[in-house]
Amino acid sequence: MIDLHLIGIGTGNPDHLTRAAEAAMRAADLILLPRKRADTADLYNLRRALCDAVLTPNTRVVAFDLPVRDAAAGYLTGVRAWHAAIADAWATQIATHLPGGGRLALLVWGDPSLYDSTLRIAARLRAGGLELRVTVVPGITSLQALTAAHAIPLNDLGAPVLITTGRQLATRGWPTDATTVAVMLDGEGAFAKLDPTDTQIWWSAYLGMPQQALLAGPLAETGPAILARRSELRADHGWIMDCYLLRRTPA
Ligand SMILES: C[S@@+](CC[C@H](N)C(=O)[O-])C[C@H]1O[C@@H](n2cnc3c(N)ncnc32)[C@H](O)[C@@H]1O
Picture (cartoon, rainbow, N blue to C red):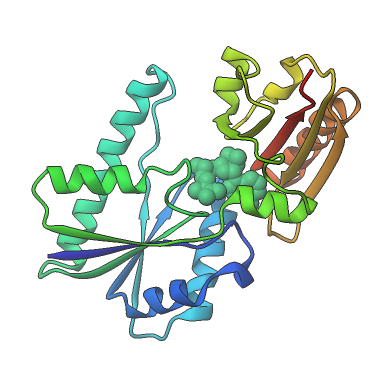
């Protein structure tokens, strides 16, 4: 039996690691750390630094190469094939390092519930016959870090919030009936395609990290400033992670 703990670690600020997260890391027999492309080495290094800060030498920490998603396949087809490849990579690590079962931990960026597929990959392994019990330790999400950094509420008074991706915003436009839209996974700046009338934006990159950047204001003026800033930052650091909240005054 594999006792899998998916531990939300927040978005880059080591002080956001909860006591429950630290306890779950210490209790693990094995922590697997995914290593991605060279341009995201900062994220690998951050997870490694958390392990160094929290663990005693009793916990085994093993890095493994995360398979690369085939961007040429259609989006969902590519993602499903990628998840299958990651499940295979986990299975190989488990067979190698925990052949008799035990407690395995994965350090999940932010929280495992929000735009993260670790739970779906665990379900694949279970469906494939691995005896697996899953426990989630919640973490601070990028949206919580975003609203905290700008000191704003997520929702308008009594109003709903729609959380979506840059891809969805770019293809479908402003969602019907929503006054607040939170956007993640936006590599292109989908906000630039919207009608900016009566719309405010609160944007941040590298939340919780020393290089954190914030911009906020009316979309008409702030949108172009964000596009310029994010391309400077991407050039400086080699990678960027950002998210934003848009709010439209109801007509
Ligand atoms: C795969 S999702 C993971 C979200 C994560 N599970 C969470 O709880 O926030 C990655 C997206 O989250 C957002 N994100 C995560 N960490 C961030 C950070 N430190 N600063 C800004 N945005 C971040 C970005 O929109 C990024 O494209």
